Length: 271
Image (cartoon, rainbow, N blue to C red; front, side):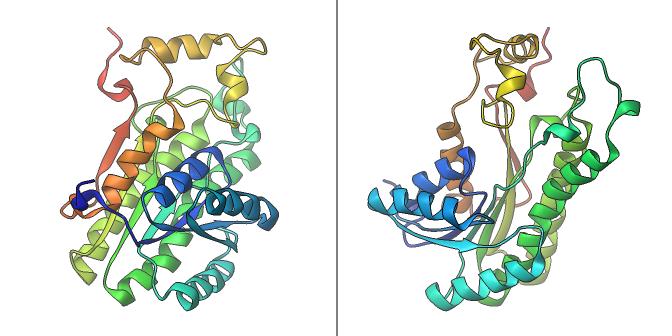
């Protein structure tokens, strides 16, 4: 492997590591020689994930923390630094849409559950801001680090039924640019912040919207595929290389960038 793309020996904190996307990234990172710190609220679920990573020959460690609670994140950061002496990478994977914030096909914005809006925007904005605030301090103190956030196709243009999620992911794109600029200006060129914008991947959160009970495509899925030049959904594993690239020395002059991994969805007008 070309060493410029290496993350060997890096300490990588992954929020949402027990989910599909976070789990895929965790497996990919330990295979690439990084030590993964799986961070989340459910210690039992995290322990299952970490056991799989260790059984596969990787080095991993579970830390219980809530991305919505700065105090618990600070305690987690102290524990990680005490154990490993540094934090090289933060992957802000925790987030996603929630049912209460999803409009039915016959509902409009005026029918929206405001509490659902509050929950989804809080999770997806502050669930990235708070870890960046806490672990970014560690990186500033040590003089190096890489943060990767998760934006969305919903940040590019309006996607029906998910107003709160869309607004939150648009905020993440802006926050990525803002934080990248601030940290580079204040702490130098060795702390970088970037984001990926996944296209459409079938996971636990969107399965019922994209697939019928018999496994066939829903009307929404048919529209998505028609707008995706590659003509298919993505596989979670297809995000791993892009994230590793952004965390490696190969991306040493890249900060504030949004990298779509979407099969061409964001590039295609549909006509």
